[in-house]
Length: 105
Image: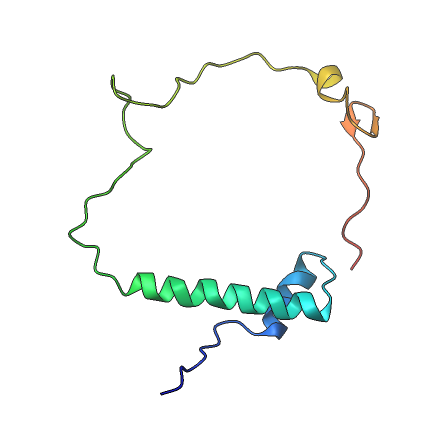
């Protein structure tokens, strides 16, 4: 019995998302990304078939800190100021970062 190929995402959908992200993909890249994303989505479907209702969570990051907690305490720091923030900016002016226009549609 031949295995049936399940298509979860098409090349056209990959192209559409790439266009939204302003990415120019070659035909080979479109094919590869469609194949790889499809494999991820098929695997997610397999995972969703598992009954995990009786499985205890292994980790939880939203808990009150206790002696066994591995999270560092939040320590507020003073703002660094505009001059220091802009010190390594490629372009700056009037206290702001200057960036090239990215939306031209």
